[in-house]
Every structure is written in structure tokens, then in C-alpha cells.
Image (cartoon, rainbow, N blue to C red; front, side, top):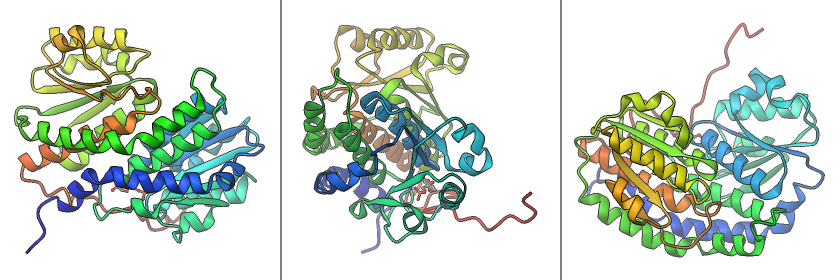
Length: 362
Ligand code: F1P
């Protein structure tokens, strides 16, 4: 029997909690070696392209919040095109390259630049330990179980991000987040993950996608990175216009695009919930359609959400992003199916971007 449309992608989405288990084992079993990469490190720079640039943003915010090590996320190309904007004034930097394939040209060039020009150490997190990026990095954490047949990244994203979260949990100095409890929450994610993904899958099957022509994703703090990743998933899979903003930024111009054909997804945080609900009410008043993904609903949320997904796990906001993201992976997958698109063969995309050398570079 032939392959079904989107079969590789839907399998990766539905089975990702199994891969999270193997990620947890890898990080826990190699904890000592992994943590030694961070000895005497004063700054961490996460880098990557596409999904993994957005993961770099998410990683930096989680990492700094938990470990208090100043951290930022930059696109890999900025490392060699504009190194002063990335490195000036920083000492003892660890550059963490996030790349599923380890073959993306900009990532390989960024690592070469760091190796040849800065004296800083590099760590590869990705799925191919023999790749060019992995071989060029000083340290590596291979997550081979997170490899995907699909071109668009789904389970590799959540699995690599979970590895970053576990490392941050082990290095945590944040007293507000008890690191033992945080690590327990992360280790526990596969179980609710499986149930939630099955539920999202069921609920989204009966959801009508046709009328939505534009998708907006809003997230603050722990959720800005997944808002950006959601925006990319929607473009890559369903070929529809999509945007991502820090939650409250939506008021400052972007709200002008609202109509009932625009679906605005809000990833509710715990810290910012009252402000985020207030903005969601405004979005409804201005005629937009709303999808809320949150830990727990309530009268106010129910009143402004056209669609509501609750995780209901009691897992803290800095541990639960990978429970939110599969809802959007499935939304993008189903929107694509409704347009007859085979997401396993996404338009203009390849597993990674490999570029020829450019001549006449100054
Ligand atoms: C992954 C990536 C994807 C994107 C596209 C091209 O590169 O940039 O994020 O969906 O298909 O490749 P990498 O993680 O292998 O560096």
C-alpha cells in the first residue's frame, strides 16, 4: 500500500512523547559530562536557523530565568555576518548550536567562525552526531531518537527543547523555581503529553478550518519562542499567512488586521494571564476569532475563547511549552489537509538548507 499524504509528519507529531522519554534518559544518564560544559561559563548564546532559531529564543529565555547565566538567541548567520553585535563585551561564552541535521550551511559557518575567531567553546544539540556541525563543536549532545522522516520539524523541536530545559533545571539557581520540582515536572511530561496530543487530535478533527485565512500567535515570557515556531509551522505546512508577537505587542498596530477570518491563538502564561485575557477580550470585541491554550480555563477565559484547550496538568509555565506546541502542529497539519496539501512534501522546502560558497565576499 502507498504512503498516505502527510504520514511522516503526523506520525512524528503523535509519537513525540515516546521520543521525550529517550531525551530524558540521554540527559539524565550523561548529566555529569553535560554539566561540565558549563563550568566557568559567564554567557550562553543559542543559535540555529528556522525552527531552531526560534528554539534559540525560547532556550535563552528559559535558560536565563532558571540559571541566571545571561543568555541570548541569535540566528546562525548573525554570528559570522555581524559578530560584534553578538559577542562584543562578552567573556567566557558557550555557543550552543541547535540543529536537527547539523548540516545547515549557516550553522556550520557560525561554528567555524566561533572556532577560528573567538576562543569560545561550542556545544552541538541535534540529531546527527556525525554531521559537520557536530564534528566541529567542542561538545555534543546527540539525540538520534528525535530524527524525523518529515521535512518540517515537530518532534525534533520538542525533544531538543526538552534537553535544553533539563540542562537548565540542573543548573538552576532560581529559588522561585525549586529545581527538584522543576526536573520532576519535566521528567513527567511524556505521560500527560500523550493524553493531550490524543485529545488535540480528536478535537481538531471536528474543527472547521476553511474560514480562517490568517493565523496569529501570541506568547510572552516562556511562550514567545513557541509563538514564533507556531507561526513558522503554519506557513510551512498550510501555506497561509501567519504572524507571531509578544502577547501585548498585538495592540500596537497588528490588531488592525482583525476580522472573523483571522484566528488569534493566545498561549496563556501564569504570570501575565490577567493582561493576556484582557487583550483577548479586546480581540473578540474587535471581531477576531480566538483560540486560547492555557493550563486552566474559567469564566473570564471561557467568555473570550472561541476555542479552548486546557493542559490541566499543574505543570509550571516554564516547564509546559511542549504540552502547548503539539496543538498547533496538529492545527497546521489539519489546515494543510483541508487544502489538499501533502505536508510531507512541503513547498520549496528541504530537510536542511545547504548553500554553495558565495564568490567575492570581502
Ligand atoms: C532545519 C530547518 C527547518 C526548516 C526547513 C529547513 O535546519 O531550518 O527549521 O523547517 O525545513 O531546515 P536544521 O535544524 O537541520 O539546522
